[in-house]
Picture 1 (spheres, helix red, strand yellow):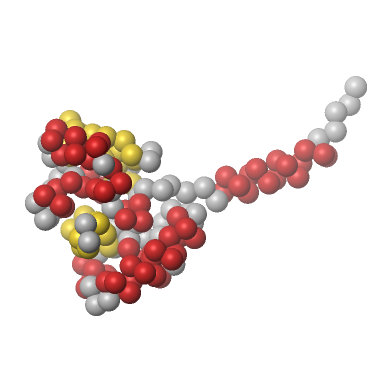
Picture 2: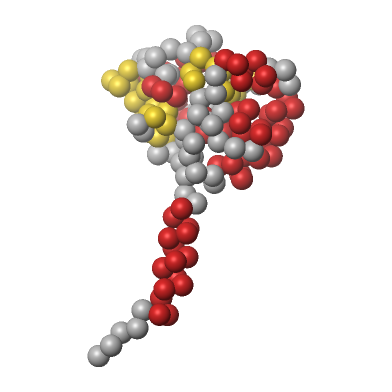
Length: 150
């Protein structure tokens, strides 16, 4: 008996292309979001604070670190509030239509949301028209999130 693979080859090809388009929802380094910085601290301390691997939570497949159990609890109660916008990818890059990595100190809090940027230089550009860049990034995010990781 001979089995022909010809009818399933187009399906196999389609599946392999489908997997190429997959990308992470949250920017991580070695599986850890925000380079191990505590997302809640941006709101409570108004600065980046290094988290600890003693206090962790998983959100959208990424591990977040926290400086305290209280911060982990606050995040667990409302992760969508504390997680950075655009999955922690660079907000300015998202406004420009592409994914870019971020540095924890290059941040802005706007209307109760955390935005991260590639570096301090990009942050300066971002701050020149925050509301305009947020509108562009919001419009681009569905397209950008599907891009391969930087």
